[in-house]
Image (tube, rainbow over the protein chains, first blue to last red):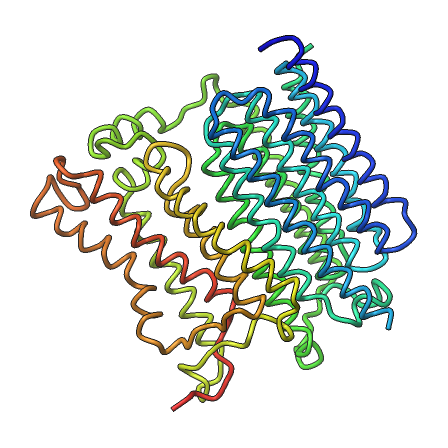
Amino acid sequence: MTTLANIVCIACISGGLFFFLAGTAGLLRFPDALSRLHALAKADNLGLGLVAIGLMFRANTLLVAMKLILIWLLVLVSGSLTAQLIAARVRRVRK
Amino acid sequence: MTEFFLAAAGLIVATVAAGLAMILRGPTDIERLMSLQVLGTGGIAALLLIAFATQVPGVDDVALGLALLAPFAAIAFANMLRAEDLVSDDRDTAS
Amino acid sequence: MSILPLLDIELAALVVMVAFGTIAARTLFAAVVSYVAYGLLLALVWVRLFAPDVALTEAAVGSGVTGVLLITAGKRLVPLRGGLPQAKVGRGLKLAAGLVAVLATAVLSVAIALLPDPAPSLAPQAAAAAAGPGAGLGNPITAVLISYRSFDTMLEKVVLILAVTGVWSIGRSADWGSRPATLGKDASAPPMALLARLLVPLGVVIGVHVFWVGADEPGGAFQSGALLAAMWMVMMMSGLSEPPRIGGRSVRLALIAGPAVFLTVGVAGAVVADGFFAFPRSFAKPLILFVEAVMVLSITVALPLLVAGPPSREAEP
């Protein structure tokens, strides 16, 4: 793999790690459930997404790259819908 | 590169595991569910990194399965949240 | 400086810490959530031990399905709490139990630390035996499960049936044959229904893929069955479908089909092939896949029934 691809890969994965850190920091430090949920979503979307994009530069076959995208999409969709479910419960309690 | 992937995997696992402190701390059950969610996403990212680093076949299928099981568990636990569980915390002893 | 040992130490430490957290949790919900987290970390450990098949099974069954089973059953017990007799456990008994646990851990640790290097294991014999009878399979684990240890695998499915029967027998006699209580709590919330509609078809495809690929690469019947079972449970929990009537013929047929077919093939092996539970060499692989497919069906039906619980409505005429 070319050096440029390696550099982009490292940058993407480091970015992903940063968002995981940010998401967890938000989970631990934010004041209430809804804002924690917001921080959580960043880890789901950008954290995993950047890691997946970074790894795609190292994928040997198309199938592997497609699996990476599939996993990311799955986590994206299920993460956001689960966040909706959780937020609805929080809202019901607040009523 | 392999070392970088493994280091990133280790850091991501450490990060999301720090979120597990919410299970003991978190004022309501919703925070516990959220810490599990972020552990799942971080686990998927770590699995993908380990898959690419160690080249063990089938690990990406484990990540794919995990991406399916995380929303399954989230729905199940979200369903089990009752309104009274979310108001305050730790009033009752372990069932 | 190599990262791998550091990663392994980190995982091991986390597993132990989360295990302590599970015991230290004060409420049912916290304990089960902690247990699921423990299972997930254990799956990572399995991956590091070069066992992705076990990792997938651990994630699916050990933490996923078991966690859902625990929380569902636990929540059902809460209304009964007042009526249950509470056992009185004295301090002496607790100390004795703790002492026994510490002793067992110490003995195990010493035994593992003193193992000769390389450690004695059955792996070479299993691999050799599987290569013969388990003809044509690229995944040695599937070969060992289906041909070297086929009797054990079949009996595991029988144990599943017994467990389901045990769960059913908890219900009232008047309810026998009817449906278990609905798993979806209230009318399906739109996000939940949407999630189910998106997740389940994809999950079914992935589950079948894991089964098919299990012949030659990590995967197999149990992992596939667990994933498909999880998908069916998603459908039930989101209100898209109801738990089936336990008296229904198709449900019962699906439950027993796995071990029944396996047993039939095994007995036929005594006549057609080398012996009891041996596969005829000429079409071993298709036969193995067929038996595995039926087992996937049984597992897919059994696990959700375990979670759904005993029948709880008046038996419909």
